Length: 176
Figure (cartoon, rainbow, N blue to C red):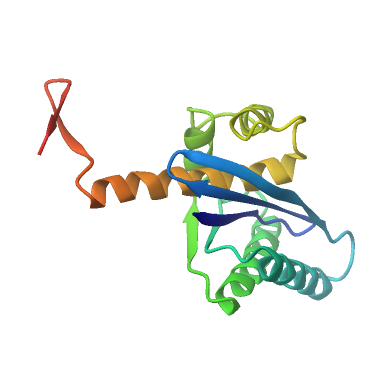
């Protein structure tokens, strides 16, 4: 049974989501947002790092997934996002976790079924897939979506590694 931590990095708000996955069974553990406000950038990065390190120590995830950097219209925003990602990645690496990265499009495709989904659709599907009583906050929902994406990708890779995949030929699956 794998505990997976997903992180949606941000220079002001970093979302985190923690799930347990065993085969097709996926269970919600925790989620939330690390809010750093208007502090100087060095203090924000320190808060992100220490908060994630504390969560990793508390929940002991075996796997860590994070959203890849996308090219923002504002280079300054992209740089700050990259720095927040770096703080999160170092927290994971210091704990001996391998870091898995997924694009926003991959996450949306995995959770909603279409890569161009909006945040409200991701929130809704995360709520449904994890049987939550209410919608998680946007950044926490994104982080849970990243964790769910990693769980789905890991399952797919495990099936392929054990020969559970097949070849598609003439629209039919043939076992090898």
